[in-house]
Length: 249
Ligand SMILES: [Zn+2]
Image (cartoon, rainbow, N blue to C red; front, side):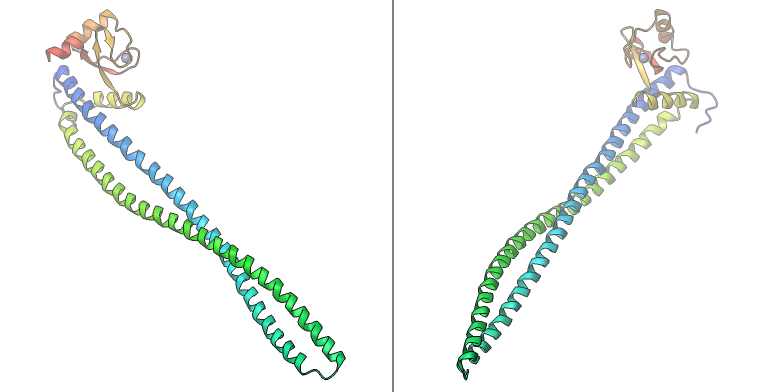
């Protein structure tokens, strides 16, 4: 369809270009919507990864405290055994010298018992606090993880919808595109690429509606005749016509 043997009159081509641009602007809007989504997704993924590191670090702390807790308890049990044995020995001593030695050992073991009990109290307190913090962090992580999964499904559906709309718009633009000579479409594409999506404009009230520069009177007269393709001398956008030409069409 690209080889138009005898092109349509320019005025009709420009009308088609105007319609084509309406569709293109909708497509541009959808493209921007689509591009905006991954940014939100990335922000959430970054937060999730930070929470995950937090959970891992806290798990390490809890594991260390748990080990200390366990070791202290083992130490307490060992000391308890020694105390039992020392107490039994004290009852079976034969002389004063042995009695003194056994009493001293018992005293020593009791001192150790007090120290270990203090340690146990401290470690188990720290362990409890750290475990609570771990539970809190894990729950935050799981909550965000569930949110990410839900959002990801939502996003996939939304992007599929956008793609569908874009495909429909692409269909809509075809009939207009085939009515326009390739050289005009090429020029329009080049200008809209450089000019934020707007490649063709009307001259309204003697001014370019794209850049608002005054259109020289001679050019304005040429525009109203609509016999040749004329760009705005200032912004290079293709003129679709003068505003009065637009209202009469
Ligand atoms: Zn202009």
